[in-house]
Amino acid sequence: MGHAPGAPVLTFVPNRRHTSGSAVNLRQLRRTVDGVTRSAGSLTRTPVAILDDDNHLLPTAIPEVRFAKSARYLPKSPEANCDDEVEIMARIERNLAVEPLAGFVAEGAAPGGNMVRVMDAALRRAIFSGMPVVKVGRGNAEGISSRSADGLFIGGSNLTANKARILLMAALMKLGSLPPAVAPEEPTDEEISATKSQVAAYQAIFDSH
Image (cartoon, rainbow, N blue to C red; front, side, top):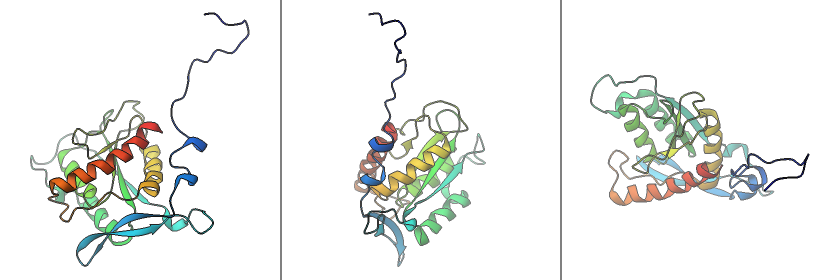
């Protein structure tokens, strides 16, 4: 079908939620969400205030989201020992001490966001400590980083690391932390299932924004 001369032709229809239609704008946030802290040696859920009495965002509500960048193509050894990732493991402990709402953006190889095994192992420890992890490709590769096959890592689609960080911060204030495992190094099948369910909620946000 033709169009009238001089009439505008729409060649691109955005299908992502944003601004007033976003699922993570201020009006969509709850007064409190659950964070995770370490208390007496155990990981426990703790309420984190997001909005004040006038439904304004509290400065203390802003989550701590750090980058984890994969800079090597091969690990130094074939063993995936998460303790070798000193920076990630130290950040996990710091978050559990003072940052109840926290997560990571894993910037891996372009375009899929793949990381070396030892980093995956450390980030898996973060996930079962309540911290969601988004995987994106290095730089602005314009490739697609999909949800991991095991359902534990959030796929950042074609977002850059910086954009994924902002969206993860907003999603944390809406959904709260992932459910922590009693022993993050050895989660039970039930704990893995609960984590996958919450990761799916995060993935829905990343798939639609």
